[in-house]
Length: 274
Image 1 (cartoon, rainbow, N blue to C red):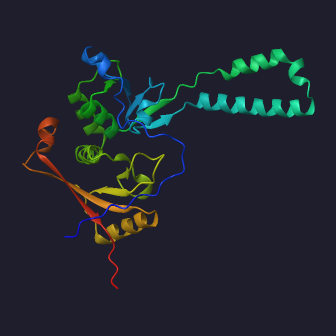
Image 2 (image 1 turned 135 degrees about the horizontal axis):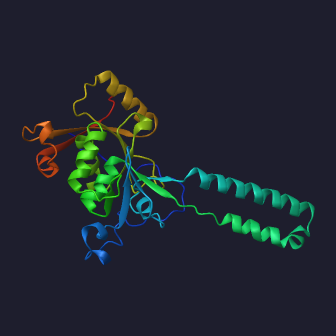
Image 3 (image 1 turned 120 degrees about the vertical axis):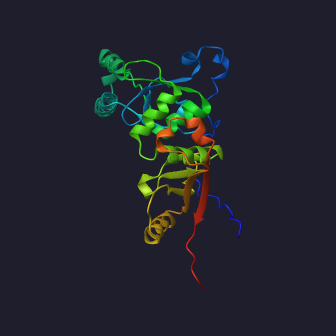
């Protein structure tokens, strides 16, 4: 079997600087605190994932590229109104050069209007949230009633809300452990996308399809492979197999589940005879 040679992905034009790969730089200084206080981040449970409100320095998104930014509609409206006000003010100052010196009070009020609170929230999907909670230990999740969730409760809740959560999380964990930045691959018909360093620096190198309990034909594989090739990506098919016969009702013990599964990956390439 020939060994796969990793090809360098297409690099993006960006001035962003690569930082540390995980958002745990502030974790060691508070490790002596109790469990519900030693986590660097606190998330609120939702139906579709976890929302982290207190991340003012965007460490989750810059150190490992976890989650997606959420800006509430009021912030967007305030930004738009502020931009429109600045554009109108610039136009008036161009027509009447002394306008700024005449209306100092109005300028002051406009500056105060700009100082609206832009609290950027970070939304984590189920796989990102459980990885930060279980693998790294830097996230603590609150229930809907405000109580802290134990790791077992987080696992059971995500299992009930997300189809094939156990197999897809194993795949997510597998590639994160290899150093890849793993993001959602729905826009390319896959389960995940693998990035070197992160989306700001490179385009995704691989599309990942998890095959656990899926009946997929070679025609569908060929279609997905062609889609991946058209966007300069390669397709990886992943199977998560259980070493022992573990019933679905026993999956609540996630530690035993993780110790009895094996993740196998297959690189799919289109062969063109010459």
